[in-house]
Image 1 (cartoon, rainbow, N blue to C red):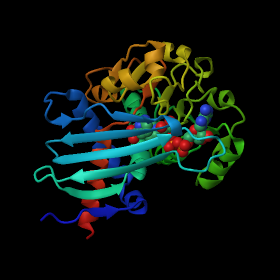
Image 2: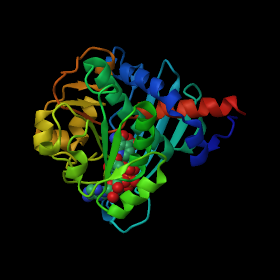
Image 3: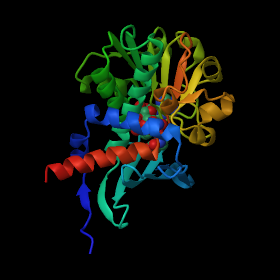
Image 4: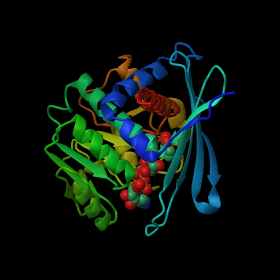
Amino acid sequence: MAEAPVLLDRAQVWRLLQYADLVPRLEVALAKFSRRSDSEEVVQPLRTIIPLTKYRGYLGVMPAYLADDDILCAKMVSFYQREEHCVLPTHHATVLMFDPERGNVTAVMDGTAITEKRTAAVSAISAKVMSCHIQLLMPAQAQVLCILGSGSQAASHYEVFTQMFSFKEIRLWSRRREKAEQFASSVQGPITVCSSAKDAVQGSDVIITVTMASEPVLLGTWVKPGAHVVAVGACRPNWRELDDDLMRKAVVYVDSREAALVESGDIILSGVTVFAELGEVINERKLVQSEKTTVFKSLGMGIQDAVSAKLVFDLWKSQH
Ligand SMILES: NC(=O)c1ccc[n+]([C@@H]2O[C@H](COP(=O)([O-])OP(=O)(O)OC[C@H]3O[C@@H](n4cnc5c(N)ncnc54)[C@H](O)[C@@H]3O)[C@@H](O)[C@H]2O)c1
Ligand SMILES: O=C(O)[C@@H]1CCCCN1
């Protein structure tokens, strides 16, 4: 009989998952995914989505298998468009890890912390990779970071971007100013709350959009040429965070082309061509075009959850 699965709650996952360990593993996984030299080595079907229309929500099912690393994993994530005053969380996720040989579940862990940290880590990798290849933005000359949105992803993005880079100024805008003020008082370092998205964005070198918006919150006319935009929200084919102007003047990168063409309203509705996957840039198969504004459109991938969950489980085992 297989042993009962290990149960790891949010606090345990949050403590075990450290960016310094996570970032290099995610870089390797993104690179592997974009090589696609062997279709059985990295298996990641397109996310299955069940609309929960009467609750303005969705359930996403995200299985992934990395054969060489022996990781078999599935994340279930629900997400909701809540009313502004609603205090319920918008995202819930659980990750199941399997023994790929025997098929039994070995661990059940909080997937919400994994989602928060791995998404932010991939965003930071996009900024790092752009800078390595173009020597233009990060970290030497990037001075101003701007975050639009003040929820869970804003918090994890603030954490990893301040760990990995040194910005002179960090600006925050959120549609409810009191939420932005609360966020600002909850973080360790300095952050300026701005009254409008435009004020926050103008002159920024790196702009992160982490909202539940379904209409654009970031306009191309505000964005400084050469800035790097990390677009994390708008994960449905009819949702937008960025306007057509920005999409059309930027060089557009994604995590997965296949997913972007099915799930990203910013890409589908603007009609732009994807230049490259982030993994292709890591593999140096696609070079970054230096002087142009760049957009990294993130949607999130099962393999990111899989390597994160494996890291958490391995660390937990080493301590028990
Ligand atoms: N790319 C990925 O891998 C990935 C992973 C997880 C979450 N996400 C997406 O990132 C976004 C942020 O997630 P989160 O967990 O921080 O959510 P959250 O609910 O904690 O925060 C959402 C933020 O968006 C703001 N917001 C909501 N509706 C808005 C609107 N119409 N206009 C402007 N701002 C609005 C809220 O005030 C809040 O500040 C969501 O769209 C989520 O689905 C993406
Ligand atoms: O990759 C993820 O986990 C998220 C879940 C919410 C919607 C966007 N993608």
